[in-house]
Image 1 (cartoon, helix red, strand yellow):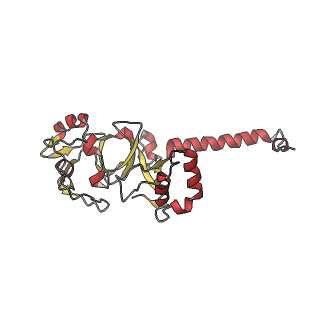
Image 2 (cartoon, rainbow, N blue to C red):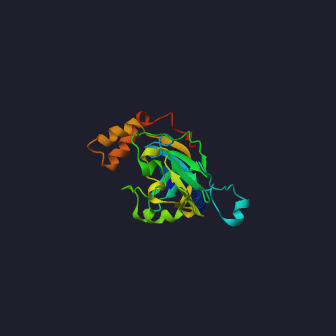
Image 3 (cartoon, rainbow, N blue to C red):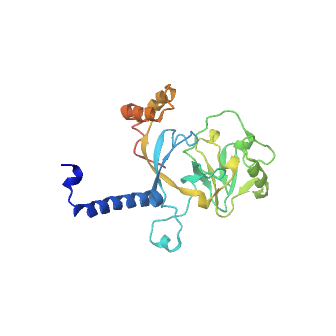
Length: 249
């Protein structure tokens, strides 16, 4: 007797209802509550590393009028790590740290961040270069161009600079990578509009380390089935256990 024959006709509606309910809950969670995200670059080292897989809380920064009184929404603060739609190419998702919020006046002096004239404590930041870059390290600079700056931002930035400070407009945020010398961030392409912000990373649910280097160097690395088989059979060697299930701060 087949599996389907073992299930009576009266059981089918309940089974279908159970499956449909599971699908609806899953779709709701992915759409409104959480989203999986993979760290694609080293711009957030050492907070987030290439190969970190994170769960993004899409609920915390919500802004839905009356729902603000019922759900645990909160404003975006300086220091929040956020995932957002890249303003230059919105189909791409980036992760950076919020450095300045609307109304702030921002200035970098020799890589140190000043907000409204006050130097900010940034224990999470790392610097990897001893070479000085006037545009990157003493931002904002409207007299020293950098080849990585987008043409649109180079044109938009000067009217927002006053007394060597960049004024953050309403509804926009200035973000930077924690790996400050190797991060293409708001210094190079401008502000992140509020509507582009998806949420904040909560948890590293898996982190893939040295094993991924072996995979990338394999002659079959372009084969997705090979990637999957390799990951399944080498999961213990690839996993950075010290980072797995770590909260993102």
